[in-house]
Image (cartoon, rainbow, N blue to C red; front, side, top):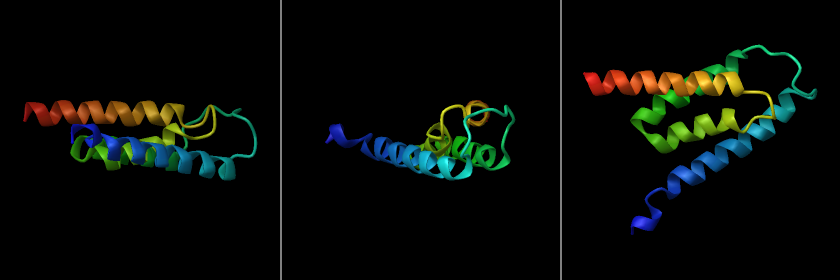
Length: 95
């Protein structure tokens, strides 16, 4: 059925955001005050950006983790992960 084609995408993105929110509240007890790029969410976002080109549901799980982080955290990492996915997609289309 065509209704369920994107169900894995939606479910895995939602699970990723919930996991990201839970983990970020354990990592950061303070509100967003330091504007720096954190290495672990950056690695997760880059993995998600790379996987979204190859297998979208799994890539959305990883990107959802970073998107779902506590408000303010993960913004820069998400943008870098999406840019990495776009660059990878352009390279794969050209080759």
